Figure 1 (cartoon, rainbow, N blue to C red):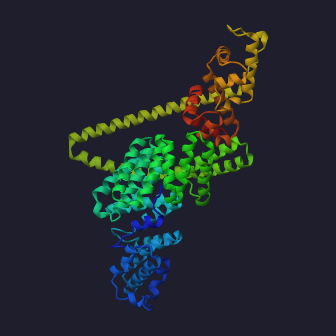
Figure 2 (figure 1 turned 180 degrees about the vertical axis):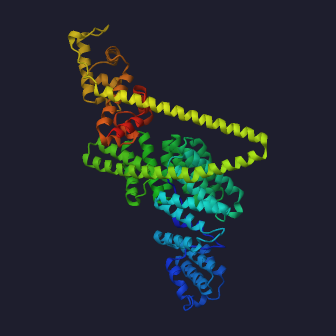
Figure 3 (figure 1 turned 120 degrees about the horizontal axis):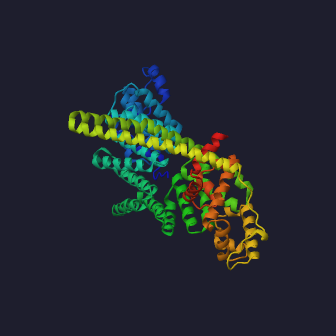
Length: 583
C-alpha cells in the first residue's frame, strides 16, 4: 500500500534546510570552480545585485508556483554566493533549485545534486551534512520505486543523523524506513516506528516548519498500518479525527486525500458500498499515479466482494494500465495481475492468459528480490544494531545496581534457554516434516489406480437400490478422473444435480464407499491433485500459495494450507521447497 498524497517536489521541498545548509553542488562546479573562480564573476541581474540572501530566498517560500521568478532569484542567490566564495551559501543556492528539478521530473539531476553534496561534505563533522544528501536520495529512490537504493541511503543517513542528534532528519529517515517496513510486510514493526515518530513530532512542533504536512502524513501511514494488521476500527479513528480537524480548519488541501483514505479503510472494514462512494468522490482530486492505482484497485476489490465481477474487472484493468506506465512494482501489482489472469482463464482467452502469466512471474521475481533484500538488510543494518544498542543500555544499567543486575542476567539467561528450546523444537519439527515428506513422495509413487466398482461387488445401502449406487459411483469416478473437483463452486447439492440424484443419496454413498464425509472427500481430492501437479509441473510450483489454492478449488490460502497439513502433516510451502531441492 504505497500512498503519496503530495507530489515528489513538494515532499522534497519539505526537507530543504533554510539555514546552516549545504545542498546540491553540481559536479561541474566541483570540478571547475576552483580553476575559474578567480577569473570569472558570476552574473547577477542589476535589479537583484544589492539584495540580501534573505531577500533572494523569499520567493522560494512565497511564490513557489511562479517557476520563472523562483529560478531567477535562486540563480541570483547562487551566483552571489559563488562571487563571495561562501561554500555554505553556495549550497543554499543549489538547495533552492531542488524543487524545480523535481517539479520537472528531472530526477537524474536531483540525484546528481545529492551526490555532489555528499562528495563536498564527506569529511565534514556537520549537524546537517552529509546525512542530508543521503536522506534526500532515500526519498527520491523511494518515489522512483528503487527500494533497494532507497533503503541503502536511508540507513547511511540514519547513522549520521543519530550521531549528530539531528531530530528532524531522524524523523524523516525513520518515517521512510517505517514505510519500507510496512510496504514489504513488517506491519507491526512499521506501526511501532510510526507511533514513536508521532510522539517525536508532537514533542518538537517548533522544530518542524512543515508540521501540518508531517502531522497528516503520519496519520495517513499510521492508519494504513492498522488496516494491514487487520485493525481497521483503530485506523478509522485516526482518519475521522483528521477529517474533523481539516473541516474545522477549512483546509481543503488535505480533505480529499483523507476521503480517499476513508474509502480505503472502509474496504478493510467490509463496508464496500461506502468505500466505493468515497473513492469515487476523491478520484477527480487525486493526481499521484500510485494513489490513482490504489483507488482503482480498492474499487475493484469492493466490487468483487459485492459479487459484481463485471464492474470489478475494468477497475483492475485501469489499475494495471497505470502500472504499465509507471513500472513501479508494489505488492498490490501482483494481486492485480492475478485477478486479471483469472478473468482471462474463465474467458478461456489463452493468448491473454500467457501474457499475464509472464507478467505475474516477472512481478513475482521483482517482489521476491526486493522483499528479501529489504528484510535481510533491515535485520542486519537496522534492527540488529538497534537491539545491540538496547543491549548496551541494559548492561550499563545492570552495572549500576547489583540486585537489578542479577535480575536482568537471570532474565537474559531465561531468554537464552527459551530461545534454545525454540531452536531444538524447530529442529525436531523439520526432522519430522522431512520424514513425512519422504513418506508422501513414496506413497505418490506407489499410488494405486482408483477402485472401479461393478454391480456384482456392490453392497446395498438401506433405501438405495444397487442400480442407483452403481450409477452414482460411476459418476463419482468420472468426477475424480476428469478433475472436476477443482471447481471452487462445487458443493454437495451441485454435484448431486450433475449426477442426476439427490444430495441425501450422494452423501450416504460417499460416506459408505469413500469412508469420509463429502467435505473431506472433496478436500482430499484437491490435495492429492495439488501434490501430483506440484511434483510434475515446474511452472505450477512458481505460483504463490494463494494462486495454487485458487487453481485447485480452495477459496483462500488459509483453508488450503490447513487441508494440506491435515492430510500430509506438512505445509504446502515446505513441500514445494523440498520438491525444488529434489529437482
